[in-house]
Image (cartoon, rainbow, N blue to C red; front, side, top):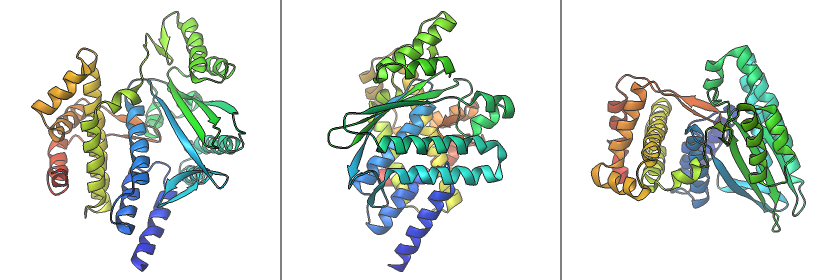
Length: 354
């Protein structure tokens, strides 16, 4: 019991130190494996949602998500370390982590303000009455780009090429739960965001208002702020590639149960996430010219998923691609990434798939 208590303490302390923790899902799985001997379904669902959201945000397509926060004893809650805990707690932790980051890098002070705004929105969301809704947005930090440069913003998870921001809509349901919707928008624009906030409280209306402003400024068709874009949802399209996602999640849990050092685990998780993202990017590009069923059938028939991810990883690294998701970016060292991936996931961890 003492060992379990110590591991619980270490897990909690590590989670609070980092505003972007690439091993957060691995730590969640490690906790369950230590305490319960297996990963709880509620934990697995949270890992699924958080990991796939990060990957989807890194795909150069619009992403729209919808999640529901349940209510327990008057609080909106999320599942963490075997229990349903107040949702506001994760926002408070996020603010604390942002302050820690800013203390060592003054350029990150604006992230403290953003985390504070997230917490303020969280308090407003918990105050919603049945049937009430609220909307808000998060824009791309253009002023910080001017001051600190694109490379810095890329390193902390922003996308300078897309200037991507988000629209948010929360609605209190009759059972007390709150449904939270998000929609990515390119070409972050204050006038467009203000117009979106004036729309009726539906994500479709908010997005239409945003796009109308961007379209008028560029005299071109627009979807989700993307010039020449078309209706698309990376989150929905990703769900169709179950073989790839199942491999990713199985590998993540196997990684949590491995005996790798923390540094080795970080390298392995970087390669797993980056490689899966690269493979999905490649599939989604092909999807534009091939029927969906043909892609998945062809993939399963001609190449196993492990090799597919390994090859996509190698090609994307050679092309110098950086994976940019909310909170941070992943860039892989070009020193034989294919062999490194195979050494990790083709050996003892890889055998967990058999």
